[in-house]
Image (cartoon, rainbow, N blue to C red; front, side, top):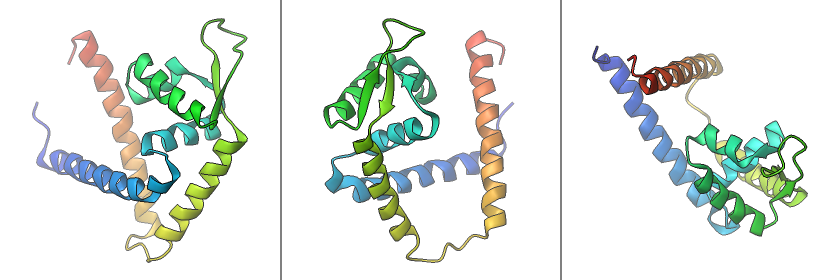
Length: 153
C-alpha cells in the first residue's frame, strides 16, 4: 500500500526541519569544536546516564564501530569518560564528565538566547500535539523496521 500524500508531505517537512536544525546547530556550535552528533551524544548521557557504545549505536541506527569513533572524539576533549561495566568486561560504560556538562550548559544558554529572541508562531498546545504525533510516528516506524527485517511487510 502506497503512503498517502499527507504522509509524504509530513516526511518532507520532517526532512526540511532536520536540515534547518542541523544548519542552526552547526552555526551555534562552530566555535565550541562540537558537532550536532556530539551534542546529541552528550545530551543522551546527561539525561539517561552511562551507556555502552553498542547501546548508544542502537539508538542512532549506526554501527558500533562508527559510534566508537564518535565516543573517541569526545573522550579526547574530556567530555566523556569510560567506566568499568559490572555487567560486561569488554564493553565499558560511557559517561558524561563535568566538562561535558559545562559544555552542555553553554550550548543550552546559546539555544535559549537564540530561540528566545523571537516569539514562536506556534501555540504550546499545537507543539504538544505535534510532538505526540511524531512520537506515534517513531513507534510506527520502529515497528515497521522490525517487520521489514523479518520480511513480513
